[in-house]
Structure formats: C-alpha cells, structure tokens
Image 1 (cartoon, rainbow, N blue to C red):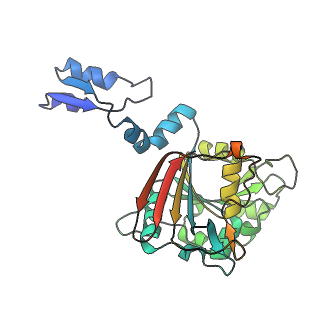
Image 2: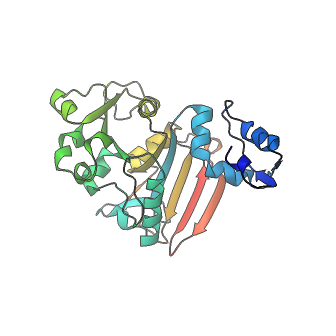
Image 3: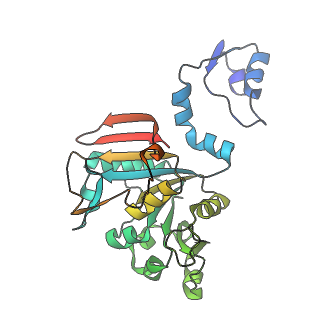
Length: 283
C-alpha cells in the first residue's frame, strides 16, 4: 500500500508470499494504482535461500534447523585434549556468531555445555539478539543438575534457557527452578539417550521458536542427521588434520547401511574465508 502512494512507474519482484491470505494482493494494489508490475525469476534460488526460514515455517509448519560444524580436513571437530572451539580461526568464529544471531534459538548437547562451559550468546560488536533462546539436549538432566554454576545461566535470562530431558527424568526442585522440556526416546528404549527430536521440535514450535541453530557436540549433531531433522548444514573446515585416533568425529553416531543411502547436500555453496573454508548446503 505504501509503494502504491509513491511516484513509482514500475516494480519488479522475484518471490511471491506463500500465505494465501496476502499472496498476490500487493501486486494487484500496485496495478490498481497504475504501476507496472513485472515478475523476475532470475534470482529465484537466491531469494528462496534468503527467505528459507520463513518459507519453511509457512509451508511445513515446523521449526527450521541449521547444523553448524567446525572441523578439520579429516572431519574431526574436537581433539581428545579439548579446545574444540580453536579448530577454526577468528573469521570463522565471527561468522558463526552472525549465524547465531539469525536464528531464534541455539541448541547444544549437555556434554558440550559441561566440557566447554560456553556463554552461547552473541558477541559481535553492533549485533545483538535480546531474546535468543538456548536449549540444552540433556536426557538424564546431568547439565541441569549443575546449571546454577554454568556460564550459560549467567549470560541468559532465566526465561530464555531451557533443558530438554527424557520423560523419565524427575526432579521437582530443578523443574521449578529452570525451564524443562521433556521428550520420549527415539528408538523406543525407555532409558535411551537418543531423544525423539520430532517431539523436541514440536515443543519448540509451540513456544514460538521458528529457527534453531545446532552447534554440537558430535552426538547431538549426529542425532539430527540420523533422524533427518535438519534443513541446512554450515561446515567450517580448517586446513588441518587431527587424526581419528586422537579426535572425535562429528558424524560418529550416523549409521549409513550402504553407499546408496548416503546423505547428499543440495545447492552446495563454498566460500573461502581467511584461512578456512565454509561449505553450506541443504539436506
């Protein structure tokens, strides 16, 4: 409507809103005002990527999931001595922070939280995300038991920090102190550490989380891949080799029965950063 009041002769658009309540109405308003309107399909793939969170939300009514991985050339994301966050360089880590800010929530596994004790906030100058939510995949409530002493509890408001436990976890005192989301097992075993991520994402959708940025660790990343619950991967790869005998693979829990069942990424893009590579594609 605002554009229709301006002295504009022609409008070129590349993407139509999928919402049937508004789809095409803006075009008609412009035409009724005597403005020429033309569709341009030359950047359709780029525009789909630019708006992919919103488009997925509307079309699927589900939370968009991005996986972020920082690894060596041989697929190792953490050395046995620790310090996994130093695998990639400063530029890669800053881009990772920008990606954090572009999602509604961050998710990590309990082991990553306890080992690294991260703040999981956005620390890029001039970039803020006041309502960023943090989720910890914590089936047995181990991280929840130590939550009061962790950096993440000090870096985020209580209402923005959530622990995701198995249905079998029961601690009334802790559940009164912190936000707890529960889910059943993925494989049907009552005491399984593999939570049903479909249940988890349904709960996140119900509290308004439309996009989720999964940062690790390997067990958590593998779970999203194995259960086919991720839409995009961001792989930051450093030009180093760490060795499978001295490190941990981010795909350690992924089980492919045969080469015909391999997981392939679509629309792959590769960017040369300072010293690292960033590869991203859709599942």
